[in-house]
Image 1 (cartoon, rainbow, N blue to C red):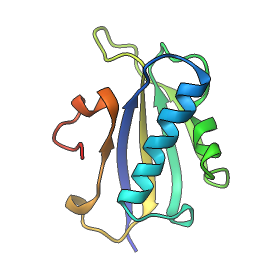
Image 2 (cartoon, rainbow, N blue to C red):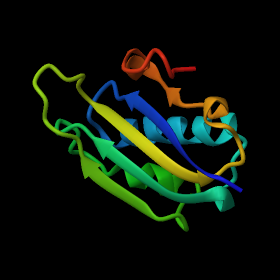
Image 3 (cartoon, rainbow, N blue to C red):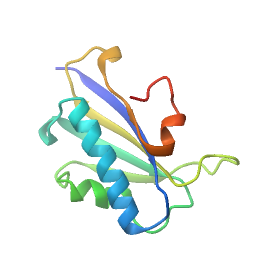
Image 4 (cartoon, helix red, strand yellow):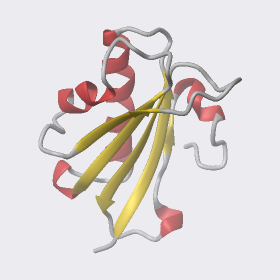
Length: 120
């Protein structure tokens, strides 16, 4: 079995706890589904958010969809001028027996424009 990194991102419409849980829950659920992963396949999940997101930790959404037993780490993105606002990015580490080009990286909502080369 190989270890793979799976990227993803989403843009929240507003900075609220409910929107954080909805947007990040949607993103993580789609990342798991598109790569046919179960919680047991996950090694760890790194979640970052832009500095303008202050209402909730992205990890709360991960725990909300059942990833409470998976090591989760939240961090703040670098505060770059002109960066897209209200974005949560994910780097999911998983046991996944796929070639690199077969891994499905998921970019949702406004964040789809961040990596048009990877977005589904």
